[in-house]
View 1 (cartoon, rainbow, N blue to C red):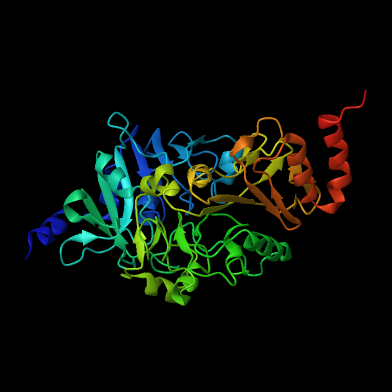
View 2 (view 1 turned 135 degrees about the vertical axis):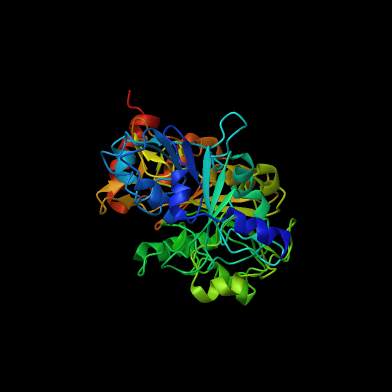
Length: 441
């Protein structure tokens, strides 16, 4: 028996033993992507005996119970990216929120997690485990944590890149096969609605006008951006590159078809470079597994503005909640209500400004709340977080057109934005614009 096999056997513990390692007052972190579900449930089952356990949840995927009222004495939760699972807790201010352009749960030497929970594949013949379909910052978190417990899921895929960790780097293993879902898929995958809203087709067509052959593409996670690939955003395009956090639905098919081939990328030519694979069918996920066309890398490399800018013709496509007359974009909050996070949007937008031939595209529906509220508005609601500052916004797209804001004056910016607002709101918006830019004597 090889040394790593003996070590792996020594480190195997039960899920109950894993949960028993958590003490009151400990800090417990989950890595991004698929959560160590069985260990999390076992920890939650100790609610009555644990107190003040600090739990860091990057993007809640499974409801462990501690998002509900009445759990606060046992578990103090911090969330990075709000999801449907933890949204009530966020709205009711029963948790803390972590902000940052790159995953913020990277602890320094003085603030390491007491226990880090992750999910890995079974070891290969050399004793290396895979993180499956998402790397993010897992390898660095494991290095920084005081103790790491890995839940072993034999369904996870293997990829090239930085998608590995050796048995010797993990303190304990719990063998468990996650049930349900597509093997290897992360919690950020598969958000495209079965029948996309009709306006999304219009947005896809307008965005397509801004895409050129040989561009390298980034697509942010979100309900507006993710369906655009399958709605024809890249129809008729050739030799595209891909450098992005994740792969929305349809991207892998475009790689198979050769439309995305990375032939003209400055860095990693011929490779799809991401930190997570998402939005994929079982067949696509199997095609990605051990496919040298795909590189999964650490998110801090992927979201390094210098690396992004090193790609000529870099195009960033990201979601927004609202845009005001100055061109200020929020993708995070409306007023003080937190709905999402900036994620990689900020470094990718900054990177496109430094990229030779680079462009950024902000997409959003023209209205919200069933068409009763305009997302193009005179000013953002008080307390709203500005994600992209007005001087950095490039193109804004709704189902009614493209507002090209680069180099425009304040009045020109306002006119451009009103022109892509919903027609029902344009007259009212123009009246508000007159108050701001053309005051009456």
